[in-house]
Image (cartoon, rainbow, N blue to C red; front, side):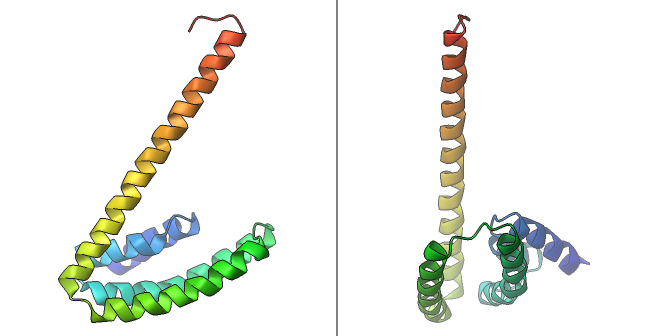
Length: 136
């Protein structure tokens, strides 16, 4: 039952474009007690059908710019190969710490982005009030 719930959560988040694999690795290692290398391997297998489904939807909606996507895919494959070799040689504890630092960096970036958006929206609303003659 845990596997179904974890797969569903990771699939929904992945379908939203927010990196379901990251959540999958986190859930597998914390709630299932699976070793980091195995969780990352499961993530790779999980990634293939979910990315194909996402590509189909994005193609249908014409949301892919091929001039940008093709070089990113090529260099992403190169990076994947390098990352797979490096991670297979790392100690599990070091790999887990690297993954934790990665998640921390993403969290900080997301918080910063939300704060920046909030400030921009607040300034825009204040400008609109000022132009209408309202109080600031």
